[in-house]
Length: 163
Ligand code: GDP
Ligand code: MG
Image (cartoon, rainbow, N blue to C red; front, side, top):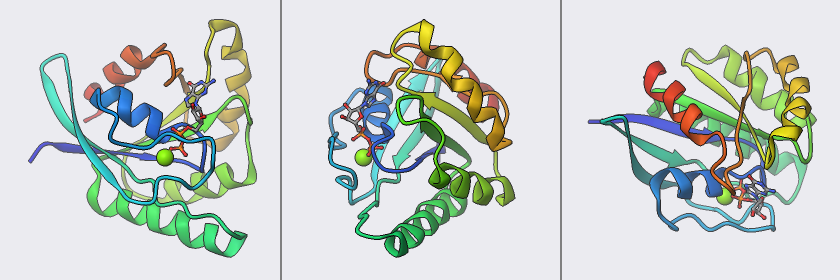
């Protein structure tokens, strides 16, 4: 059974875009409308001769803060019960939100490795915008652009080194 990497993060942060890029598929629906990916998607990724599975935890159907609360718990439950490693996505376009802080609090308590990933760094000049995510207490953010693929090779290096 290959190692499982879970992609976790609030709606619209780019989870499905990253999933599709890492699995080189279009299985996960990418949408501007938050809460589009309802089901979990599983795929495979190979990097430097190491194979692992990835799950896009999706599952956001955000109609109210109450439902969001349940959705966080469901996502993190999937991640902590099944996964060996969590990719926690935040995005520099929106910046740090209360939702990110809530997810970070839960992930810090979970006993599994977490890689903090700052998405939507579409050009290197935007990397400084990721500095605020240090506040989440999950270490250095890995800057990527899931849309262009920028930084994803370095991210995969860290993933296989952590697994
Ligand atoms: P999810 O809800 O977390 O699964 O997010 P999606 O993958 O559906 O993406 C939400 C929106 O962000 C879509 O409009 C994507 O095209 C956009 N997006 C995803 N990754 C990037 C990125 O690296 N840069 C930019 N500029 N937009 C992105
Ligand atoms: Mg999605």
